[in-house]
Image 1 (spheres, rainbow, N blue to C red):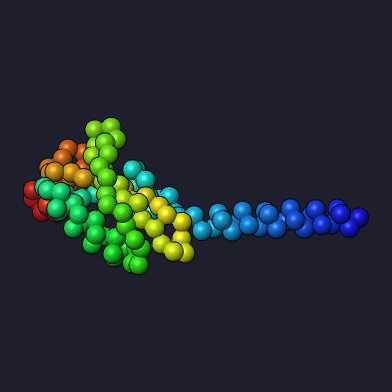
Image 2 (image 1 turned 60 degrees about the vertical axis):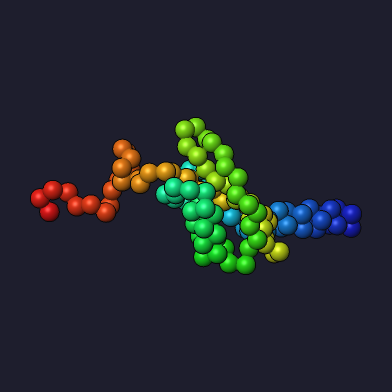
Length: 119
């Protein structure tokens, strides 16, 4: 009976560890956690991309260390992907959608900056 109780205790400890790991996972719908939720940026040069990424990461992930970004193409879109780390958290990738034109000029994107005629 003691062996059975020990087995149950060890099993429950293993399950509780897995449950705690799930709690600390990043929210997949958070900005930048996937290409679908990528942070959109309008940049005309790689220097602007660097500055935007550094400013955004400092604001949203203070104290995290960021590796240099890498460009990748997914479909017809260009992304800058940055791997960030922190001493007490698992590393994660942050995705930035890089466009060379203003989104208001792109068909299919809503333009909240302009008012429609007659307003």
